[in-house]
Image 1 (spheres, rainbow, N blue to C red):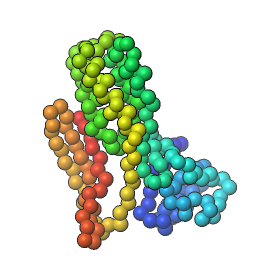
Image 2 (image 1 turned 30 degrees about the horizontal axis):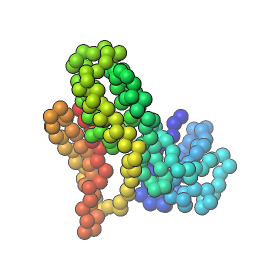
Image 3 (image 1 turned 120 degrees about the vertical axis):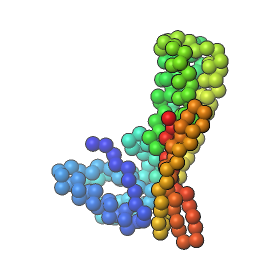
Length: 205
């Protein structure tokens, strides 16, 4: 079993969801062992405690590869240092792929950054380089210039925002730009006297 990332529009809905999850799993003979929430009212001091459950108010938690900070309710990234592969005397296709593979972004939040790295990979395949072949000097220079951009991902803090809305409309758009095809899915959220652009997910090809 793995963790379940989910949410609710308000506190009451969150409490109901919490109770339903515990009840559902117990009905199948399974116990829910941990719970993390951005709202402190969903943690044990404000609800009926269950000795079989553990609650977390830690600074961050990881679920299905996503790193989430309950406070202030945001997605973050933690990528180990990439300079070891970059500072080696010989930069190879294998070392570049190994570095890029450390980045996991299932929601497409950092799609533009990853796309540039994938374009470099495409160039390496077109050159028909073997895994341990050194990169041409121009690509080595480009790759080293990209390392700073990749490591700056650790500074990102992407808030999770929940709006109370009257209606929404899901839209899908496609753009063709040079070496990439960009697909965007976004939600148009309508509040009273307000128009908001909701969360969108890019997909690059």
